Length: 134
Image (cartoon, rainbow, N blue to C red):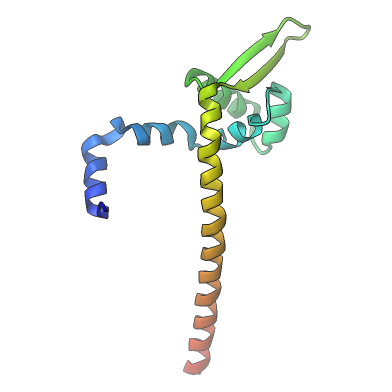
């Protein structure tokens, strides 16, 4: 098993050229995971996405979708209606990310529960320690 030091050294040596860091950089900004998650159930119109992303500006949703399209993770289809209807969908590459996100979500649920438990235990220990000091 690699040590923390050897992993850190590898990161420093490979820098931004490391494929795993490039991939993480591509998908781990504030809005990308949410957009990819929303698209997992099928294509969505731009306004549906914008509404469901919530908390983001139109500019940020547009920038996120353009980035994902450029990276080959989503497709953009414009329908010749008046006004034009724009629909976004995951590409096969984008669909492949869904299992990775599901794994990450599962880890986060476990970690969050464990972290909350540790925090509660620490809080109880601190209360008892404070009680014995007085």
